Image 1 (cartoon, rainbow, N blue to C red):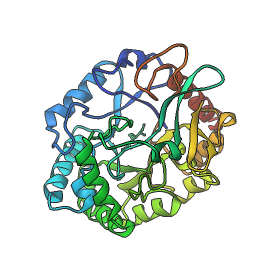
Image 2: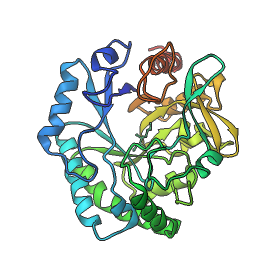
Image 3: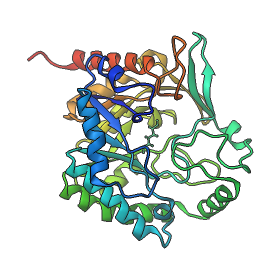
Length: 345
Ligand code: DNO
């Protein structure tokens, strides 16, 4: 397991120098955050990021993400140009020696929360989701009120996209995913990159917009669409546990060999389509982290793992979910668990 930490580039207040001081963290998960979605990444721009990270004594283990354009997800005319650009970026990532690319196929929004600073009993703040709050939001002015990490749209652009997706059946979205995978998996293979599709977060349709990568059956459908080892997934414990009753360790075992990246965080379901993100250890939420890590170990997982989001603690301010302190605690917890699960040599 390669313990890794997300870094949002030069403007990130959580600098590489700080990350370097978290014991055991050697990998960096990042992207070319200054590039517009849909733009092909030049090779030298990829190597610049890789080298910056290297100079800080760390290694880029994952690109998260290369954004997938709405033209591809909607199957529109522009998709050929968009997939060519995606493949060019992918190729340059591979040629730069970076082995994993995480991406998602969520329409319009990436991960969604309705509260970025829910105050917890211990005084920390955390991310939370409540579908009633989302459904009651006025989005006529666009996405300003929502934490959206891909594009931000103004009111008319958002309304047009919502209408297009609301008319799109799940099967059509699956076809568009298959079309995409048919084109990108061979390129990934040719440059030695493993693709890791992130499940939808939260894993249910939002605002009438379909979301298809929601459960084990969907993840298996993804890997069988193009049944090659390079076509894998990101195992995100938090996303997959937001629907109650999931057997995560069984999911890990069923996906053996196709999990190329692990996102580890904990959530507590607080109602129908409602949850809060909790500290990483098992006892605070619904994820049995020890059992998940045991399943990963027993299925031979050797890839990158990152403590996913963290709460804001000790007065830290900054990018919601991505402060330093609680993610660092998460990194220590995960590596402690991993060490405890490792048989003595
Ligand atoms: C949230 C992340 C997601 C993830 C993308 C992957 O914190 O897990 O934004 O990066 O969905 O494409």
